[in-house]
Image (cartoon, rainbow, N blue to C red; front, top):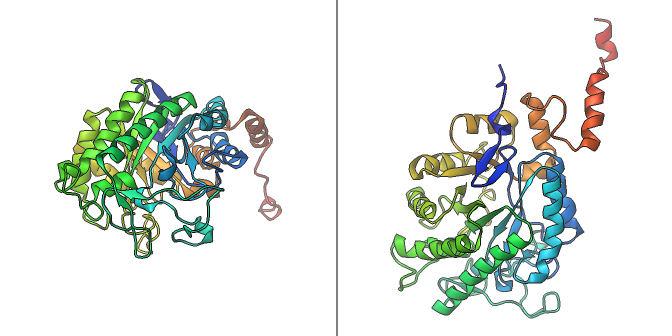
Length: 385
């Protein structure tokens, strides 16, 4: 027997923002920006997720400064000129019932990579990029990401202060651009994760060594963003709950507790990336919901809301994650690229939207009419049975 009101399609209020349902579009890079500016591709890409019924639509990882670019084509928000094109997207998302959200990320030592369809590896730094010189590669320590990648310059205190302020300025621009949720990207081997993980942080000052010291940069970024971001709007933080370099789930729980005291509302629980491309790049990833236990543990032991991500493909699978108290949101990524109307289809499967009200009126009217006129038709071979 189906639930009369599936949790997946129940609203969730965080601070003053109410999500119409618990389906979150996970940030997915499109490598299609020009000078950090979004294009018509981005508008079409994000718009279809609102049309498909997702409650929370994240844009891709967006850079608070140019040297935070991971790949040519990453979105940026390091200047006021980036704001207006983003506003066009957030206005559309909100008009069609979704909450617009942005993830802020700095690549650190992973800066300057080829677009994935051009091959995985560092850019040729002897060739200008978009008519400009290459950006500098910085990191907590002078430790390269992988052999053959640029050796980053170890950040000074002045660098740290500059980057933290860039994150705060990005949050202010995100507000001007119409976003209702900001997420700080502290995962997947990017700059904040580089400070957290002992594999990439070899510092001997107050930002390195002990767990408390390695967490310091993440917490200072969080404090700066929270101060710049309105009190009535939610702040999320993405973590790699475990990595290949010594960061553990116990460390993540400790970090989540500290983040909560600094005004973070939800921890988005992914994994890995400090020494591999992504959590799904390994052939060992073979089971549905393989990262859900991280969200469950953080939710329980840190007492903070979580988002579960990682091979969540089916409506009943997503509903069970929520019903069992393992997470508060389910983040869907590549499955939404395959089926942008996944939320609407899941609502049909769970009996949450029999009249197609989640669909745009221009679509829902036709689909509801199709059902009421006897869809699906009976196959000829079945008529004679």
